Each structure stands twice: as C-alpha cells, then as structure tokens.
Image (cartoon, rainbow, N blue to C red; front, side, top):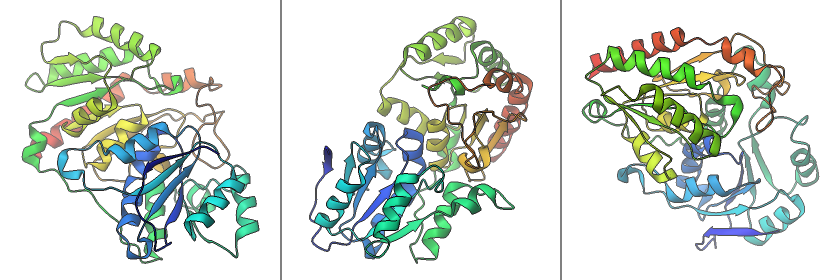
Length: 352
C-alpha cells in the first residue's frame, strides 16, 4: 500500500490514533475540530492521524495546509494519508507505529461499513475502538449532527473539544457577502437561472453591501459561472471571481460576513470560522450533515430522495445522477432563498 507521509515527527510514546474519515473536502473541514481536539489531548502525545480512504488529496491538503486566516495556523499534527483501504496493511502500520486507538468519525453502521466491522471483530481485543453510535445518529428520536455526536463521544472519554477563535463583529462587518455557486457534484448544483435571480434580488436590496460570486474549477462549474456572470454583469456591487486555488477560495470565505451555498465545503468552512451561512440542501439531510452552530440556517427540499442510503441522511449518487434530483431542486424556490437571505443579512447588519 502506498502511504504518503505528509508530516513526520517522533512518535516514541506510541500513543497515536488512527482516524477514519470520509475522503471529501467538506468532511475534512467538518472534522477539523475533532482532530485538533485529539492533537491537544495528553493521551495522544505523538499523534498520528491516518485516513484509510480514496482519494485523500483534498483531505490531506486541508489538514496540512490549514487554509485559515493567519491566527488559526498553529496546528501541525503528525499524520499519514493512506491511498487505499486495505485493512491488513493498515493493521501492520498500526503495529509498527504502536497505534492503539481507532477513532471512527464516519460510522455508517455494518450495512455500509462492512470492511471496518470485519476488522473490528477480528481486532476488538487488541485495539481501542471509538466510534459514533450510527443507530442513534440516524434512527434516534431526534436527528443528531455528526459533530455533536463526535463531541459527546469525546466527552465520555475526557477529551476536551477545541473551538477556533471567533471573529469580532468589527471584522465581520468589513467582509463581503459570498454566493458560492459551484460544486463538483452535479446533484448539488441548483441551477444558473435560480442563482441569477437570487443574486440580482439580494444585491439590489442591499446596494451598500459588496457581493462576491465564487465557484469551483471543474469544466461544468466554469461554464455555469460564466453564464451567471452574463446574467448579472450590470450589477455594480457584485463581482464574479473566476476559478481560484483552494487557498484563494478559503481566504475569501474566511474574510466574508455571510455565505450562501449549496456545496458542502464553503458551508463547513464558514461554520468552522463562525461565519453566518445559509445552506441549500437537496438530497442530503441538513440536520445531520449541515452545521450545528447558531449562525447556520438551511433550506431543504420537502421531497424524499430516492437515492438516499438507508438511515444515513446522504445520497449514494455522488457523481451519478440521483433518480429524482430535478424534482427535488425545483421544490426549493428562489423566493425561499431570498427570504432567508434577507433575514440573515438584516440580523448581521443589526449586530454590527
């Protein structure tokens, strides 16, 4: 197995842990506080974090490069990124590095995480297993956000949760309002016409605010943002920013005062930095997979997703077409997004 050694430090204490997480960028951002919490805990001195998932590039990029404003860049963990999920070789690696604890942040239960549960059954007596209660998260009387569940898992093991420093209202008031209209998953992209109408209405109502429109770098995202640019080109307080590097995109979001998006990573990045965010959710459950902070609001479709994995709150169609995604997208209206956008901008303006 190819193991990319991203950062190497001495792990003589042998008390590191293996962290299992989803490989997508949004999930890496969402789990940042959890990994930071583990890195600060004395029982994990010489921490080694490993992601047995493919692909790992975006997750490893995020955790290692820390794309936050400068004051947040103090976290330098010891970690490796696995290029494939091979539990035999992962076990050898854990023994070699004397890793005794497995922290599972993505637990979807034995129906979907079959390889993990087979591994756990074999090695239950050799390693300590920390994992989310998947049944409680997805089937409990009250749906629980993944990070809220992670915090509770840490609390019972006396691991103190880490919170990033909050920005002041003075910093917030100087920021832009950001529309992040891209996503490399077509099922998450709302549509050019809808975004044009939302941008035009909000920017016309708040002429003293500055608005930025951001997107991703895939061919489809570039095509869509070009069409959006054509539809809002005459708006004096709106700037459309072309495809950027992750660092550039992160920096803009980090300096914003409010973010509206249908994509995972800008929602989670804004939430991590305590920036108010309005999420638009189609086939994904916004309670489980959104933000858990007070500054977060969401609009979700009332229609059931035919492609949703049983009990998980997310759709199985990441890069394939969700069976009823068109109907789901149409069920969320421009008027809903504008209404919630106005409410949040008014609230932010009053505070600042």
